[in-house]
Image 1 (cartoon, rainbow, N blue to C red):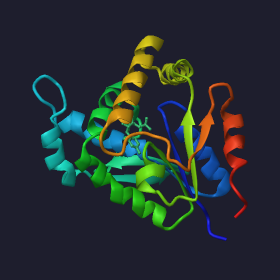
Image 2 (image 1 turned 120 degrees about the vertical axis):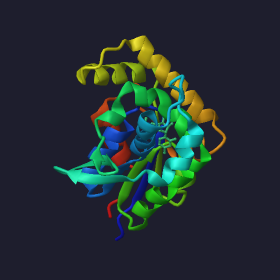
Image 3 (image 1 turned 180 degrees about the vertical axis):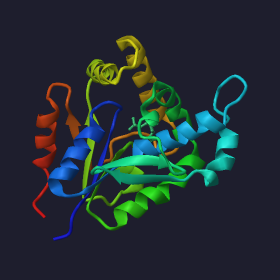
Image 4 (image 1 turned 180 degrees about the horizontal axis):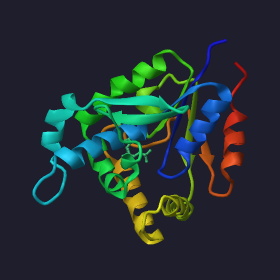
Length: 224
Ligand code: C5P
């Protein structure tokens, strides 16, 4: 039978991407981290479209969207993001990008620009896509939809450990404030807000680890 299309949405730092990556490997699906695309555009904006006060010049960014070519390339079995031919997979995780991405992602033009890229990938089936609006807007016909959540404290703790491991100097309170702000902008925006699709399965992993979360999600997926 046909390989499924799986949508995984949810709050920041619930482990969506790393969990999706592992499930993709186990089931032989392609994994697409859609947050990376929004981060890629934000990275471009930080380099090329800033006002004198260092805020992002959204109008300039929108006019330059046609100049932005984002593409995933397979590097040693992992999809890494390239912007106009340059590998930016590390750079898109920098705090400066995290701090500005939600502001960029709320723009209709930005979302439309990325919609085709995302849908094209899902056309062939056999994909697991993680993001904020995959089950609601990008792939409403997905075979499986999951919505991931966890407590704010637990998510802040996980994100902090991740940043610490990557050598970033920060503290847990700053990390928590970024998460809260990002979730607020993502949930309250007019276009494609972060919300659970009516037919999505809720996965709360506050009290279970990564392996248990993976097993829980896999328990819902029928053999194909
Ligand atoms: O998943 P990640 O935290 O890397 O996503 C970064 C940001 O990109 C989110 O906070 C959100 O503003 C935006 N995003 C989105 N829609 C998606 C994926 C990400 O708006 N499908």
